[in-house]
Length: 116
Image (cartoon, rainbow, N blue to C red; front, side, top):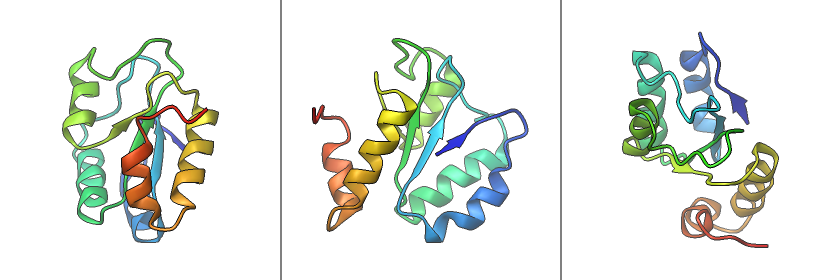
């Protein structure tokens, strides 16, 4: 679970992608991220090409990701929105789903479903 901040080191995180089963990003409370930065967009593209699912969660209440262009860009890049989950809940759910046999496929199938 990585918290997005101004100056987020996307290039450093990109180097970690081959060893990751998934990437959970905690976006700004508005549901946005530094999508205007080329290195951040490259990180998302690399994750997509490596089939590493990227989930986005925020501490904002009722945020859907479609309120602002930056949030819509996350969705266009294939990021999975966490809906009303807290960051902690999204972490546990991602860990549980990715820990199953064929975890990435399981995560893609069940991410948008309430499990409890």
